[in-house]
Every structure is written in C-alpha cells, then in structure tokens.
Image 1 (spheres, rainbow, N blue to C red):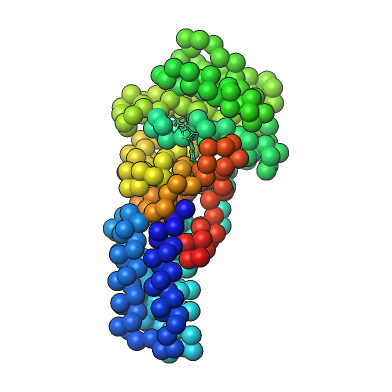
Image 2: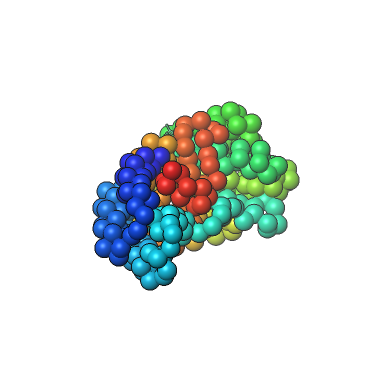
Length: 297
Ligand code: GDP
C-alpha cells in the first residue's frame, strides 16, 4: 500500500533532513519533487496543487527555515497536510445511533468488491461493536449474487435474509426491514445491485430502495486500483444518491494510492473503511493519521 509514493517521498525527506540549513529555494526544489511524486501516484491535479501550495506557504512563511531542525519541521508540515488531504484526524466511523435496525446501504459498480465488503462490515460490527447484523442481497441482476452473500454470511457467522426467488429489490428491502425488526437486529446491511457503468436504471433502483429503507449510512464501494476512475465514480454517485461515505477496496494491491489521496477533496466524502485483502477480516477502519504515517514511513 502506497509503496511507490512512500519510497519517493522518503528520498526527498531524507535529503531535507540531512541538511543543517534550508533556503527557500531548497524547499521549492523539494516541493517540485513531491509534486511529481504525487502526480505519479495518480493524485488529482487540483488536490496536488492545493497540497503543494499549503505546504510551501507554511514552510516558507513561518520561522521554519530559521529553526534548528528545518528539515524535520518541513516533514512535520507535510505530515499534517497529508492527514488533512486524507480527511483529517481520526477514523470517521459509522453513525448507527438510530432506532434499530440501522440500515447500511452498500452501493457501487459490479466487481468493486461490494458483496465481500458488505460481509466484512457486518463481521466487523459484530466483533468490534457487538452489533447483531443481518444482511440482505438486493442484487437480482447478477446470477448467484444472493447465493454469494449467503455463503459469505455463513463464513462470517452473520445472518442473511432467506432468498425468495423472483422478488424485486424494493420488496426484498421491505421484507428485510420487517424481518430484522421482528428478530431485533441492530443493523441491516443491504447489498444493492451493481452494474458495469453508472447508469440511470442503477440510480433509480438505489433511490427507490433508499426511500423504503431510510438508510443511516449509504456507503459507496470503489476499487482503489482504478485510481482517478474511482474518484469519478464517487462523484457520479454522490450527485445521485445521498452517500455518507466511501469504502476503498483492494488497497492491499494499490502501490500508488491516488484514489485514497484524492477522494476526500474531490468528492467531499470521507473514506470510512479500506479493504485490504480477500479474507473477511481484511478490513481496516480508515484512519487518515495512521495512513499518513504509513506513507511517510
Ligand atoms: P461485487 O461484484 O462488487 O459484489 O464484488 P465482489 O465482492 O464479488 O468482489 C470481487 C472480487 O474482489 C472477489 O474475488 C473478492 O474476493 C475481491 N476483493 C474484494 N475486496 C477486496 C480487497 O480489499 N482486496 C482484494 N485483494 N480483493 C478483494
């Protein structure tokens, strides 16, 4: 995760720290290198610009260059700005303090990792927060999608709504709400259908489900390996459905990290979780401070 960027930035900062004194030109030169590194990591251009401007202004404008350890101070400024870029201090958790069942609606394109992530989050809520969750698949498009969620539920030891063949998404959502109320579930996870592209039919279906289910959280699942496409997908979705957060999957294979670094500023939506593998416990509560620490080594 972030390996390439981490290596590149590590080189720049070692050089900065190695010098006793720093001039304004040294800072500008280092920032040029950081700029290239961020662009190569596929971070969106406006986000890179804002980042470089903020760091340069803070590093040159204050007493940093006259301090005893200017290199260290510049690195500290970079760290702070990275945390900001990733969404600010601390993990932004799920807001589930509503009358149960709190509905979590999972949306995203086909193949993004949505079904796997639905089960991962249900398992996480059970194990980390003691919440009793039920899952229901509303995906009547993809053959075997409902069966896939059932199998994942068995693996995670999380209940799934019994499958009724032929039932349509809104009706499945109603039945799932009813069942989770009757059986006193704290959380109901709704795995909606994905399509290959963002299209009107997909958005209409999601909105119809959202109207019935009044979700406490609407999480968009996107594949971090798709880089700026992931950010574009998030923008398209957030214009159509009331997203409350993003889950970035396949972070385990993402050496660049552009989606993670651009998501907050481009879409305004917090990254709440990161998928870090195929196993059901490969889910991390996304914490900007920890992620920035990882990037800076
Ligand atoms: P969906 O079509 O969006 O529901 O996608 P699936 O949940 O079926 O996932 C598609 C594939 O991606 C499966 O093989 C998953 O095991 C895999 N996958 C999902 N999340 C991750 C992740 O965070 N890391 C890795 N390496 N694989 C993942």
